[in-house]
View 1 (spheres, rainbow, N blue to C red):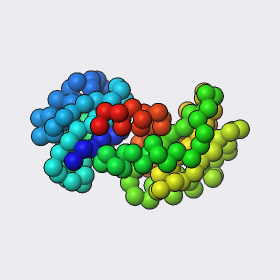
View 2: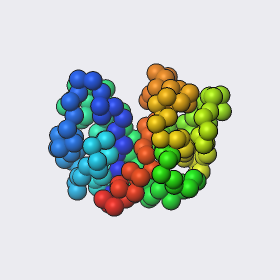
View 3: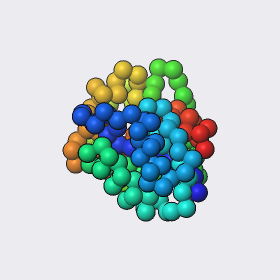
Amino acid sequence: MKYCAFLRGVNVKGTNMKMADVCQVFKDAGMKEVNSVLASGNIVFSSDKNADELKTILEKAMSEYFSYEAFLFVKSQEETGKFWNSIPFEKRDELHIYGFVGIPGVEKVLMEEFKKAGLVENERAEIINDIFYWQVPKGNTLDSAFGKVLGKKGLKDQFTSRNVNTFEKILKKF
């Protein structure tokens, strides 16, 4: 079966991760057809194991190789396709749209946090197929009230986000 691993913390200070090294760790852990997508921690691969087993195996391998606490999400090709096919917002040049990959139920937590945050013009969020999507004007991603919430320590192991254009690039690698 084909999968995508969405790594969180690829740019963790001191890890100095190169995608070629990450791919080698995946291969050494028994994954096949390993390819990186962009330099942001998206690895497409195949395996006969299920997603839960893969998460455990790959987090351990990454943690040992890079000497940090690895955290990743493993989604099947079909699940990854849902991120691209469920985008609720019209794409516009002046806006970013993010999809959030995370633990079950994190979309509800994110929506609660979004509703509490002070919003900027054209900032919106929706949950489609249990996926949280966030639209924000370019240049406001890190400065918006909700963007700052995303960095909370209590949330860090519950999700990772990707610009929705990344999902299209991932799907082309399958």
